[in-house]
Image 1 (cartoon, rainbow, N blue to C red):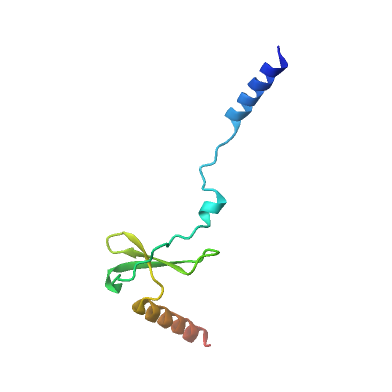
Image 2 (cartoon, rainbow, N blue to C red):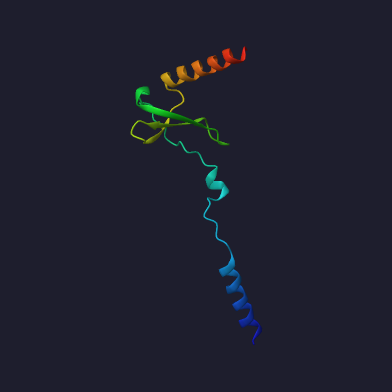
Length: 97
């Protein structure tokens, strides 16, 4: 058998045996989720808040709304600032700080 043909067959067999990962590349997993945060979300429509800290991104706050839609919130929203301040004070009181 010709050496070139053997090399091609070997390369094809190795290619067929390689496990293909469906995970995102590392660089895509580290991107900022919130590129254009919402400023006019009313606090009564929010069901759940999720805080994300990703390198090279500002604080990202993802709100799950009552209709299960997810939106990014602007951290400078007044009601959100008050919510965070109250949460920090509650933690400080529970720890006796």
